[in-house]
Amino acid sequence: MTLKKQIISALVILAIFIIIALIFIFNKPKVGSRSGNNGAKFTIEVLPIEFQQYQIKIDSFGVVKPRTQTRLFPQVAAKVIKISDNFREGGFFEKGDPLIEVDKRDYETQLKVSEADYQTAIQQLEEEKARVKQAIDDWKRLGKSNKAPALVLRKPQLAAANARVAAAIAKLSQAKLNLKRTVIKAPYAGRVLVKSVDIGQFITSATSLGEIYAIDYVEIRLPLPDTSLPFIDLPENSRDHLLRGHFQKVIFRGHLGGLNQRWQGKIVRTEGAIDANTHQLYVIAQITDPYASSEKNVIPLKIGQYLEATIEGEIIENAIVIPAKFVYQQQYVYLFKKGAVYRQDIEIAWSNEGDVVVKEGLKPGDKLVSTLLGQIISGTKVRLKGSKLKQRKGSKKILKNTLSKVQGENKL
Image 1 (cartoon, rainbow, N blue to C red):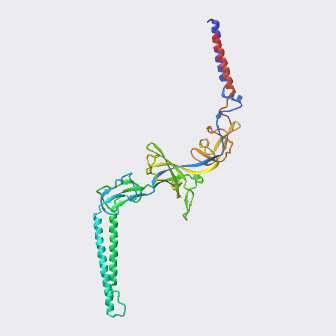
Image 2: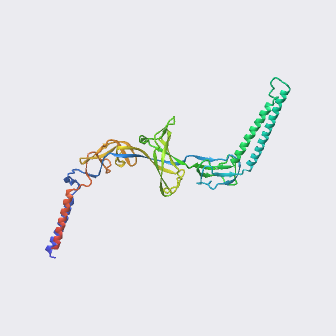
Image 3: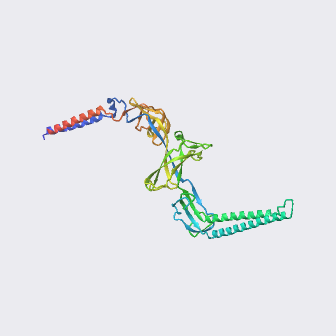
């Protein structure tokens, strides 16, 4: 290569660098005014506002509690001789199932003694009745015209005999009842929470045998925020026992053993006072038959388990609903109008972590700014995402021509 060609190549390379530098200089963001967006500092996206049907869903939480929980105590004193296989922590039982049996021999003896006392009292009563009859006959035989005294007719003795029979009957009934109580049976279908007794232990009426709870349904106490009350028709009982409102549907979610599980329940009643600690209204929800066999929930509910709840409230027609993340300080949003963003104050009817139902401030057709902007001056110029700038197209064309020229020079 001759010296002349080397000089020409050096000049061409220098020219290319100068041209590239000029391209970057003349394509600064401020030149965006050429596309009709004078002063645009941000690129944004918008969300058109329109009416929609919206189901209010109120989030809450609570802990599983049994409908009925009972601590078992015996009504007789004796030694435990048998315990049901179902009477253990977590065991299920049905109403009337025998749970614990104690030594009944003493109570069988008491029953026999009571039966004998009863027969003796019956015999004494019959003898006294015969004596009364004899006394009446003797009085008549004496030809007495006046009424015989009660003592002569043995009325006090007859009353005492009747009282002894009544006492014998009572003792016999008590003996039968005590014998029956030597077998402790389940008062309802349930499950064992705590077992506190074992075979060979002597128990009295003060001995706790364990704790059980009913399994027909469980209850969950749920707090409700005050702002949600206008959107849910709670069941309320009046003094005349008339029920108002509805049993609202509730979906429960729990996480146990690495599994996410769901249960369906309903609100059955509303508490009669505001909680003094949280200043919230509480409602009681039920899950019916929570321990039935189910393929959906491998692990059944546990007493004391924490559950998240979603309560289905009112369905709003023609609602304006926007994502909560586009609302600033729970007071305002930004709207896009004529190439700029403007602050718009709103009034919120209801909100949760994800959605906001707007009562005032927005109307169908408005364009909600769906790009997080922070706090900017109302009226700031912006451009919509997806707009193309002419100068960028021109820059690409210049660069393409320059590269073609360089390639041509190199061929020389």
